[in-house]
Image (tube, rainbow, N blue to C red; front, side, top):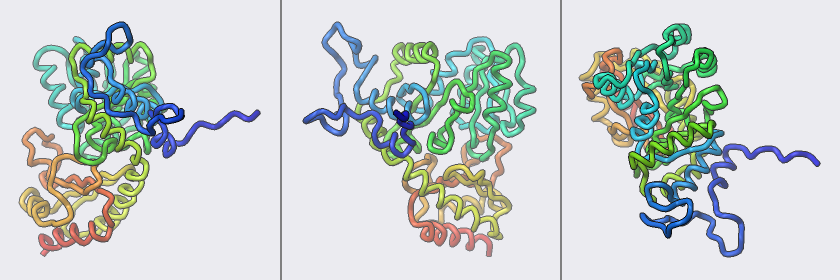
Length: 357
């Protein structure tokens, strides 16, 4: 008898994390509003387990090819992973998410670790930075907001040869476009607030691993710190996951078309689109002032700092004083949504035309 092939991502997103197909079972796992359980079982207390988390974790784990843990926010997930490091070096993408770079700086200032920031797209430079004191290589691909892409497989191979773990923040690409565990990563991190949940209505994070022992360590850290999501947030995030493949497909198609059209616009000096996902960066000629005018001059696009929702958002990243100084003053990060691409183009091009004169 032929072996049944594994389910594909679109099917997994819809069917994983469901109750059994028994008579009168609901199709969706109900929201479990409980802080206390009757003693003697595996749950015991609301900081240790919740059926709403479990359903989300089963689905994300199946999509990433590992075992997932839900956290209260993306930053909570990041901190749990960095907590694995003590008196060692972390090599990280210099254009990582601000929260990641900020936490690395905070931990370094307190003597917990040493941070070494590198150009993650320069594989030779990344691998050359690995030494006997390195404990972790932190990859973002694409990076936020520079849109650089890393060779995850090559970096992971070099890191493992030196006994170093590899983490990939997969928030931008999602498991629909990139499965880092299959490329050699040890840990995958997500801000589930973004594409996974996809509707700009919750804060959540996640970590995915393949190693059972590492899973137990990270769950232990979550149990101790209490960095757990609410049941309702987990339920909403799971509902968002059900449509993740469709949202990524539509938003990515919109992003690719916008990047193509933007490449010839006279108001821009650069368009950065790695061809992976729905994030685009544009650099406005003239720097901060004209870029700020663009983000104040649209009706469909929303000026906002978060991303990954069904709606299109954008912002000039250097408005944040903590953004890397290697990011151009005029860089605007676009999170392309699922609206009609012609409406998105008309609105954005109109704003750019006004500053182009």
